[in-house]
Structures are given as structure tokens and as C-alpha cells.
Image (cartoon, rainbow, N blue to C red):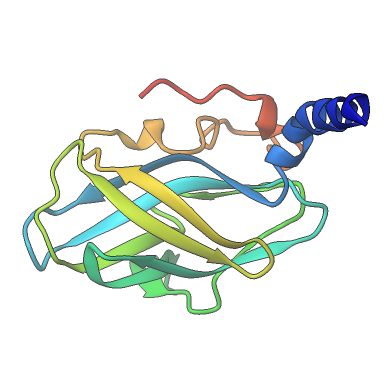
Length: 174
């Protein structure tokens, strides 16, 4: 009986890494703020969907702001960019990544309840249609440049990143 328990424990230990990346996984989160109470900020990150079914980010929450919403930037007919809420959320296709980055999709913090400075941590809860709640600690990094955003290859022309296996990539140094 004891040997059976040891074999079962060993099998679970070996299988644990395979289960570690089921569903969604968050990489490279960071926030930028305008500073001060009542001001705004934004959160950027990469959402990796390791499941074989599509998922959707349907909710965002944090206690650091009065209102937390999913937003995107869109150009109107005259090429003028504006920001708008995305109440339907963001789809994350099966076995792919979605980048929430500056100038595109992002999480907006409105009415900050505290002054946030570089190095502060924002506790964020992401709610997914299938994966449920995922809690993320997001560091404030106002000095981060756009080229250091979640997708290190976003500006490489002519490359199709949709078929890349991002799970084997190393995260860029902060």
C-alpha cells in the first residue's frame, strides 16, 4: 500500500508541470499612471491562452481605482485616435497570445484612490469566461518605454507572430 502511495505521489509530481499552464497565463504586466489621487493610469500585459479552446477576458477589477475598464484606441474617418471602452472584453484565441499594449488594447484605471509611484504594486483581478479569476500583481513602471512593452517583436515588419510558441520565449529584462 505504501509503495502505491509513493508511485501516485511521484506521478502527480511529474505531471504537475503539464497542468501548470492550462488556461491563461499572464506575462510582463506593468502599469503607468499620471500620478495623484483622482488621476488615471493604464495597465499593459500579455495574456497567453494555453488551452485548446478560445477564452475571453470579460472583467477587470482593482481596489486602487474607482473604475477599472478594458479600453482600446481607434482611428476615426479623419485618422484622429480616440480611446473607448470595450465592454464585451477581449478574445484570447486558443493556443495564442493577446497583447494589451500602449496605443492599443489596455486596462484603464480611472479615479485613482491613491498616488501610485514607480515600484508600487497594483493588485488586479482578471476574470475570464472559461478560466475564471486570475489575480496578478502589477508593478508601476512609469519609466518603461513603448519598445519595452509586452510584445518585444510587435514592431518587426513582415513577421507573422500568430503561429509562434510564446511559451518558450524568455521575458525581456525590465
